[in-house]
Image (cartoon, rainbow, N blue to C red):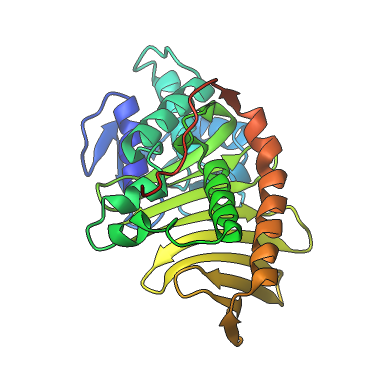
Length: 315
């Protein structure tokens, strides 16, 4: 959990943005890394209830910063809370214990409200194509991505667009996404924002990162044991790249195609100018991973008719 996410949680509970929030006599503040600290006395009865009710492996509500799943032995004077879900659960239980505020929303409803606040802030409906057209030093490249291309190149470009639209379904205005089926994370500022959607059923992570000079669209598949799969579409100082990465604890393979300079090959190996077979390989792999996450998207969207969104081409 980052400071941006902490502020969105507290906004949901009616607080103005601050470096320190006070609830029921306790101070809540971000440590500067990945968790919120809660300082001051938490009665043993409340601490024990929280420990029994919320799985530490899921909610990450850590007594005195301890990573072990231990039960409190008496009153607790410091918590480290790593997740949005854990922080919301902690606050709700604290308010219920002290009867300090009438609760109108339960845990799931509160989380859905916070997720919507995060997504509103990061503006997920902006496609990476439109994002790059707003970057003065990059827009010329993205204005010409359809120029002087063969049919295969055009097909590849459309396949990349399809991949982007399933990893970030909000950018496809054909789709109305039910974000409550996802666990949402995010960080939002004008030229530097990101968000990720974790499918609760499969654990698949769909990530979009947008910076002043580039972007990353990433699909992470944790379930292809013994391997994990990452698929990337990104743009940085080296150009626009599609990459397929497979790794376990002892091995990593990564094949990438740089669309800017047309090179293809292993990340740490020799590269060559991409030929027809290489481009077909990219298309076939994108097809495979689009199909793989299609069920995830179908479970979480409503399709809206006659609102198709396509990339703009130069006339």
